[in-house]
Image 1 (cartoon, rainbow, N blue to C red):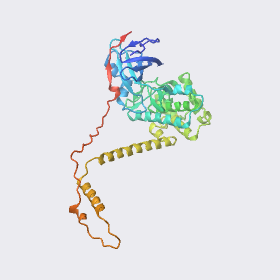
Image 2 (image 1 turned 30 degrees about the horizontal axis):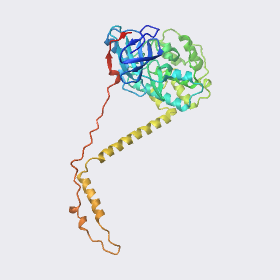
Image 3 (image 1 turned 90 degrees about the horizontal axis):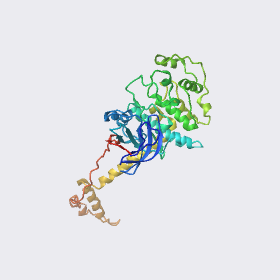
Image 4 (image 1 turned 30 degrees about the vertical axis):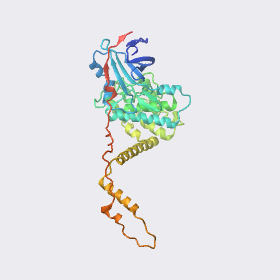
Length: 403
């Protein structure tokens, strides 16, 4: 596999027989991502090489991203980990993920006209589903932003779990977390006392960006970030600030501001859209909507109906298959008797209307034809549930050589 060396801005290459590098597709603070082709199955993958080195496989296993993906079951809206490559000599680690077409940031950048509302609904519904799955399994992402939301064929998947944390660890959490523009007020004003509701704030910022193609709170510093939030939402009530007071980093006294309001920024937005956006961007995290409640919002009514129709169709198909399998089984004794009675009734010749109906000896129960079970009939093979192992457990420690 050819992937960039750690701590290098140039695209130095490694050579391994399993993968071949196609091109570099991204670089962040902690990793470089390249598109690579598997020489084993011929498919393309996104290979994320960490810029920091690790000393042993135990350290690789303890990576926050690896642990989170192992805790989570496979979900259609979460990016799937395909493989892990670890170089024992250099300590370099490469995480191999499924390859998506683009991220939301690239999608927004490439568009010139607003997206249709049904497409926005589809993307936001899938994003809320991914967050609900995370939160239901005791994990929150902590870095929801357009660059970490990937799409392919109208399917949305949340990726980059390097900043995620457990809900059961409890605060205080790391203070500097999430990208500033998508950081919730409790992350800015407290000493690490926040919860999974911060993901919903970030989702609201992404929602606004998809609607308008521009960021909602593009602050240049933490103080400027708070100021931009107050410009739109206004200063919070004293009761809300008192909740932050025991956990605040420094004393703050905000000049009272009313705020322009979200409606003034996007007057073309429908009231239903605006309702969900306001619930996601509640200053008080206790009043902010949860991922479960967001999925039940009226704006997603069509998505829920479509999901029910798909579920009903799947169940009906399963029932039809089950009935088809039962019909191929050998008939029971009761079935043979019913079949014989039908044949006997068909064998009775009806008289003319002016003739009396005489009992036919064929109608006698003892003389009904009997259809024996076919002893040479082949039995259908039993249906077995084959559960695939999680792909993130497919781990190989490889020795990589420099070219």
